[in-house]
Length: 354
Image (cartoon, rainbow, N blue to C red; front, side):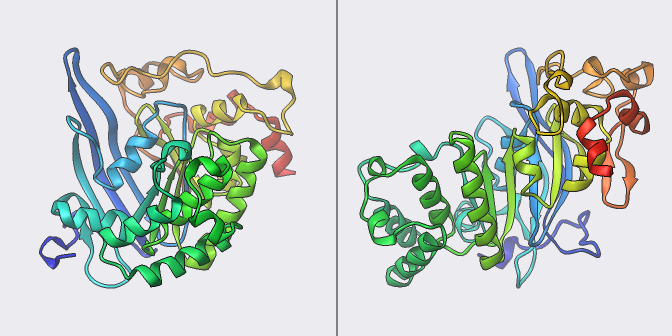
């Protein structure tokens, strides 16, 4: 990539940790006939090198738009603004939103790769899986022989038979095999960051667990940073180092996965935990979250969650909360986060603390 567009924005500084991507004041808007649709709102987060960041929330909360933004892949007429900086292992930081089109194409496969939703439709049915690998290698000017050798190793790491997989058409392999082949394809150019957007949503629970276990091993072997998007909080919490909880197109709680699972501070996070099946919560204590998420063209004033929140009052309606520090590595956007545990108890959280 050209050095002409490299260089971190002056408002973004690397901290004492080691962020591989920093995101500052990122917004996405669509101009609609009924007004402006805000589908990402004031996102500020650091993704640490080597971590697995899980991003969770209800459908329509902005998770996919967040990862599209990391790759400057928001489709028109969406308007993406803010600052996104990628820090490669060597060389100068890269201002992602300032890249030329050809530089962006390189970044998307060679530095930051992504596995989109729907492995079933990700492959061209008229091409073998091996031809997909060859096409990607050729498009990026990589040596095909070396690349196919790497494909063999990746497929083996993911418990697939390389020769059989590379010679098969997509319809000749199962959904779980197709998903693993897609993960291998996303790693063929040796990226530093792998983004996975609901990658196991169409698979049964056993296959989901199997793929996550394999992915965990691959992450360690190839020293990857993972961003894992899902609506399934129990799946993500057992896999991620940190969790970012999204509601109404913004992060409302960020912290270590175990900390959030056992000490969630935002009323929405606690309601989300209470609404999903788990072994420690009796069925009678499970409860769906009442109400609906805000319309992107009509955000409520103040805290976006206040219309559904049992703790809300006039302050919540009038003033949008900033992030409060629950502890050193745990932040939350709620004026009354200290009262959330008492108002929305979680029996499994009590078990974790014993």
